[in-house]
Amino acid sequence: MLTAPLFAGMDEESSRALIDSMKVLDAARGDVLFHEGEPGDRLFLVRDGKIKLGRRSNDGRENLLAVLGPGEMFGELSLFDPGPRTATATVVADAVVLELGHRDLVTWLADKPKVAEHLLQALARRLRRTNEALADLVFSDVPGRVAKALLDLSTRFGQQVDEGIRVAHDLTQEELAQLVGASRETVNKALADFAARGWVRREGRAVVLLDVDRLERRAR
Image 1 (cartoon, rainbow, N blue to C red):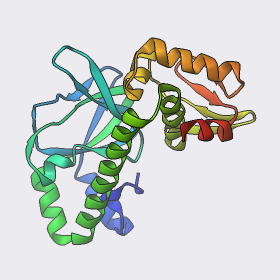
Image 2 (image 1 turned 120 degrees about the horizontal axis):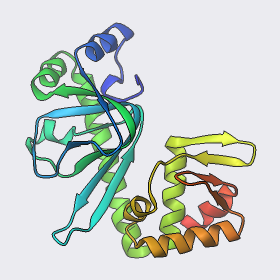
Image 3 (image 1 turned 45 degrees about the vertical axis):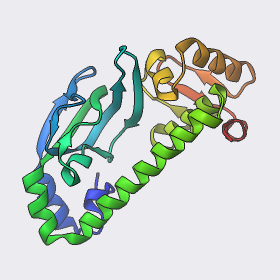
Image 4 (image 1 turned 45 degrees about the horizontal axis):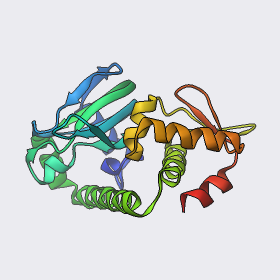
């Protein structure tokens, strides 16, 4: 929890005081924390579980921008640039989320300017990831994007097991396809190919990465 950018550079006492001032929300899979287009005036921090951020096109198609887990935050853009939410936040796996309002955060940042610097750095990293994702859509084929998505998920949700890295992503096949920006059929074909080559093993809403080196080469 305290590794989140919001707490970077804070001492334990200050971190605890900020956490105590935040509202705790218990949310189940499928719950929507906010919708795209709604006014945004608060930041959220994931304590447990997983949250997906997605956008929906006019014809109803959905694209997943990110899947977030413990220690990660979202909704912070509205604190620096108040306006409509740019995505919908939906619970993927039962979650506990901490909520901090705009006024409370601004008051806090006035006394802790170093925290604002860390928050801006976090925003810059998210923008960099967005730019990389856009480049992948243009220059990478679907199997390459699938490999890269699995590796990215493994860095945050992976657990070392005897055979490799088990990634409990909690995404449906459709959600994984939305994250990659391709059809479910095409993504399933790529995963089946990876499994046939011995690179991965599928386990429902989880996957075991058996050959990380091969996946990394395929993701390039």
